[in-house]
Image 1 (cartoon, rainbow, N blue to C red):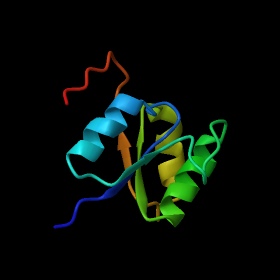
Image 2: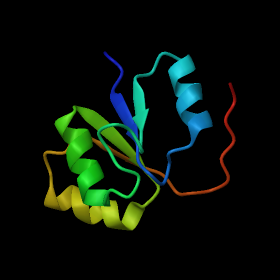
Image 3: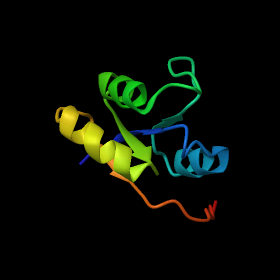
Image 4: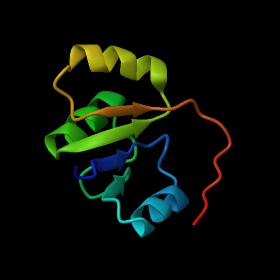
Length: 89
């Protein structure tokens, strides 16, 4: 099974998290990037990640439950409760 392509949205866009995932051979992008502005809406981030074949990682659980129902053909949504982040490299 291949690893999913992952996109960290603006909420989860922590450089250390991206670096840790990249160091473990994951294909991960993050907002902002050349194709996603920092102020992009949740909907825009989901749709663009989907268009690029990426699963989006998000802390905003409530809003993304609604978006997942509105766009059932999304590329995948990983939702996590926001807490203190520790990244081990």
